[in-house]
Image (tube, rainbow, N blue to C red; front, side, top):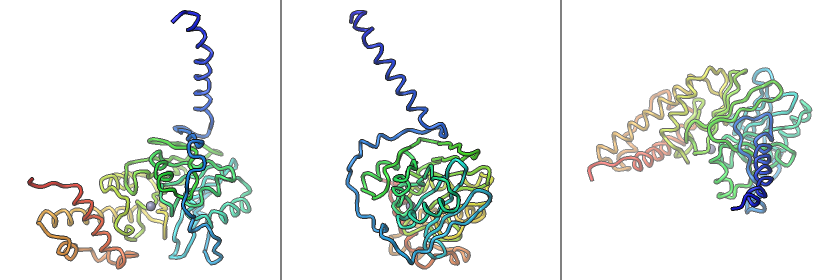
Length: 323
Ligand SMILES: [Zn+2]
């Protein structure tokens, strides 16, 4: 290549470097973001939003946890879904709108009560029952954040939710209006797209679906990774937190998380032992023992056999004996 030819590439290289640099600094509130090229997903197919229609009977609340930190809930039971909300003078940060019909209400409620726009929506993972409604906030100008593993299932499963604007790998830090919010991926746990969200100034943690508040893990542990689940609970147990929102029902304490960890580890060990004894499913599920405490947890009757089944599948898929 001639010197002249080389030189002719020079402005192009400078331009690429500049654009790259500008892109990295697109949002001064964030450290660790990657920006999604949403044009790649223009007009991608989505399924019907089954919770998109207004439901006057749906209960919704936005209640103060502490200082500028709030918790939104929707549905009864006492809360079918929930997520933390941080209000700052530069805008609000919402975790998991959960349902479109609730998101419409929540957007208006934040505007009415605090008169600030929602700047960021953090999706704890790529499941429809938590990510639903994110499109409502995106259309109003919010940036949607999810762990990088969350993009594929949102597109692949044709979820009727926002295509996220921002993804990250290990940690994303948001600094907004004098507040700090840390979004972290500890390990694949409940899905491989799980984020936990720490509010250090409030000693608060969002631990959706991985944490439980004296309630049984849902169903057959759908989309779960046993090792990463325990790793995530162990990480949570090391945090200095007083308020833990688990995305459903009531808020949890670190003691609840400790008890939940004991339950899941015990279930795993019992199922593994029974499988190694050569028991078939039909024998095995009758021989798993639950403590009296666990028997009192919310959803025990509906979920206990399903929990055994989910753990039986996990154990069966992650062992090999002689041969
Ligand atoms: Zn989930």
